[in-house]
Amino acid sequence: MRNSKLRALSALGLAVVWLIVSGCGGSPPLNSDVPTTVPPVSPYYMDRDGVYQQQLEQSASQQADPADAATLRSLAGLSWATWWNNESDLDTEIKSLLTEAHAANQRALIVVYRIPDRDCGSYSASGASKDEAAYLAELSRFAAMVKTTGQPVDAVFEPDAIAHMGDSRHAECLARNPHRFDMVRKAVSILKSAPSIRVLLDAGNADWLPPTTMTPALMRSGLDLADGIAVNVSNFQWTNASVSYAQKIIDEMPDKLIMIDTSRNGLGPYRDGDANWAWCNPPDRALGPHTGSDTGHENVIYARIKLVGQSDGECARAAPPSGDTRGYKAGDFVPLYAWEIATNSKK
Image (tube, rainbow, N blue to C red; front, side, top):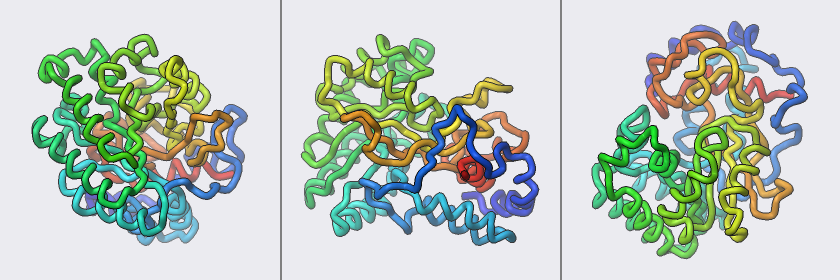
């Protein structure tokens, strides 16, 4: 986290921003997926001392208004995925999570985000594995760590990667990596060598590729080996639309699990103003349904995968309520953005 940026944002005063945040803590609009009940017991281990929780606590401790601090700390009390973004994470945060989850006899939720040429060289490219050999070696180490204890893990596999591979608008990415489908299939096979890992291939979102395009890309990537798909990761599509989209993909594979990212889809996708904001730090968003399997669908689970407040990238957003997010790289923590989303989720 960039501490100088954090201090600058904190100095703006969250109370000032409160006046221009839609909702201002009132009831959510009728067209809303914002949860109206207290969170149920999470099926996943909740790491109270993880990097994200530390970011929230640091930001909360810098607020002059106790109410603003409480709003930020409310996010830390929810269930979140742990992202494996960097090589060093495996021997630090991931190893610690596996150990603690095993001791607590709970399943771990981990996002595997290490593929070479990650994000097709865009905002999230920095820090990925350098090449196929290094990537597969990392996954082998991870699978071995899990096999040692038999720790149950749900692994959300490589957000955006397979959708990029199936999207003709990103043809240059596949041209740079002509054996990418084969590499991904090998990666899935390695992860599945640990029987307690459930692998969920990222399948984009309901507003990206149609199921008729996404499904063949998933099959080439090893969907037959995997346990299911993850949809809407780091996106904002409505929950019902996401479920419907996912069901069309696995129509002939009813045993597959569907996971929907509900971190920021409580008010659905952003449809106003600058179209560049639709996926990258859009304003006026809110939490979606709580993590859990009480979804009304036997094979569907909701999970908060994207960490609220972490930037989607250095995109062009320089307006209230969250201020200028252009100086924040993908994954950087933006305190005001976290606060805004938490505030818009209040009842």
